[in-house]
Structures are given as C-alpha cells and as structure tokens.
Length: 362
Image (cartoon, rainbow, N blue to C red; front, side):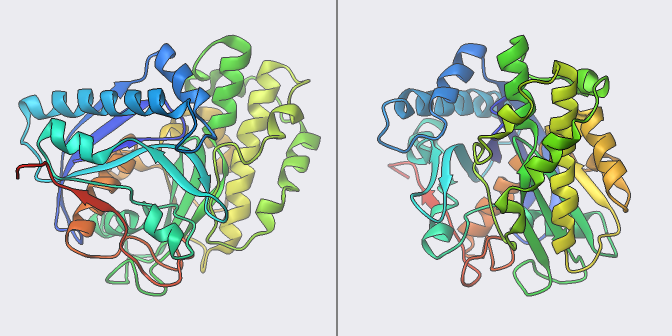
C-alpha cells in the first residue's frame, strides 16, 4: 500500500497495488480521507517550517492520525498489504540549502499498524546532490509499459505544484540513460486554491467553473514567466511557496480573471518545460487534481501541440497515481533497487532512498 498527502493538502490518498518493484502486476482498492478545515489550518501554519519549529509537531500528529484512519479503514475489508509506503507531508523543500522536510513518523505508523513501513524517501537523494523530487518518474515508466505505450509520452501531475515525466517505454528499466527525464514545471493548483481560500473561504474553484468565466491578464502572465526558475535546466524542483510574488501579480484582478490568469500561468509553465524533453512526446497524460479543472485543461490544450488527455482514459487512476507510486517505490526500496537517477532528480548516480521501519517485536 502507498499513501500520499500532497502540496494541495486536501487529504490523504491510499492505494494497494501488486508489484515486484519492476513490473506492475495489478491495481487494488483505494481510499481517501479528507483533512477538515481545522486540520488544514494547522497544516498551513507549518508550511515553510523545519523540524524544530513549534508549528510542526501538532501538524505532524494530524498527518499521522489521518494516515492511520484511511489505512485502517482500507484494510478492514481488503487484503492486508505486506508493505506500506509512507511519504508524509512536505512542509519545506530546499534541496540546495537546508534539505527537505516531510512530516510524519514512519516508525510510529509501523507500530500502530503492525506493518513494515518505508518512509523518508527523499533525504538520501538530497544528501547525494539530488533535488529529492520528483520521485514518481520510475513508477510512470512502469505505467507506460503497463498501458503498452509504444512511443515516448509524458505524464503531467498537477497537484499543488506541477511536475512532468518524459518516458521512453522502449527502455527496459527506468534508471538507464534515455529512459526518463523529470522535473517540476511550476505552480499548479496551490495558487488557485490559496486565492479561493483567501477571497471566498472555499477550498478550491470546483471544476474550474469560476476560472472559465475569466480572462487572462497578459502582463501578469509575462511577469510570471520571467521568473529565473524557467531558465534553469532540468532536473529541478520547487517548494510550494517558491513563487511568493504570484499572488500580488493578480491581486487587483477580479476573482474570475485572477483564477484564469493563474491557470494560464500553470499551463504556460508546462509548455515552457516541454522544450526540455529529449523528443516531443506523442501525448501528455494528466494526473492529479488539476485535471478536474476545466480552465486549466483548456489552457494546456491551447498551448501544447500534442494531445492532452486525462490519464483516466488509459485505465489508470489519476486520483491515486501518486499513492500508487509510493507503494511501488516502497517495494523497490525493500528490494534494494534504485528510486531516482541523474535525469529525474539530478543526483550524481542512480540511488535508492528510503528508510525501512519494522514493528518492534517482529
């Protein structure tokens, strides 16, 4: 089983898969547990904070408790997994400085659930010079082979931050040169969700309905694209709050125009990033919550030359792909396989990350 609580902080996804860490054999049941508004406020106060900050401990307890709830519920009626992949909640990410911080104690989960838990996936990569993100690319490579893709394609995950993986499914393993290229594209849902919370006290623009009625403010879009991040060569990664000037760029716009402009910014960042792909992908498969935003999907289709499809059209589950990825990565860690490479995180050589915690007494 794998779990994921992303930068959008809407809740915890959990998903069972069957895999040997190389081939996907099959997909199992899934579950979701939403954070309450009060819990989300506690989590928000911990954003940008490091381990010792006083805001972190109560937020980490919420992360652990909600994970326990969704995992326990999912295991009541379904097969008990042999292994759990626990990502935790990212509160800070500064791979070229202080490191990376995912809150939540995997050993505590192992004890409560009586399961071996693989966690702390990113630290080893960062210590060896990598960005520590994104980490789903090796799973994307397995997914491309699972759906029998026969040409290079790209997976775009639109969570709080966007990330893309270019995959050549003809390559037999994900860690060899030419198999994958991955990087964070730029902000995705987070600025839109933050605006909705700040202005309208709502968690998101449901379906992108309000954004669809707005117009793009071109000067704000152009100012956004002048950010130095877009001049960096991949692999590269972002923290949720790495574009602090973005809210001010749309502060004077109407709600609808601000949301449409933020959707255009997210899509334009993806289009800019696609220039780095070794070859143009034959299609772009969109996963994550952003694929439910009609304005964001319209902006992507307007700016990209290849077909842009909801990943669900392939039979994969776009709401659970990240959770499934950490189940897959947990098995790779347990088997001593690699989880990142120079072309996915910029680490010096392909490396396996993660800590394995066994319940005391086993």
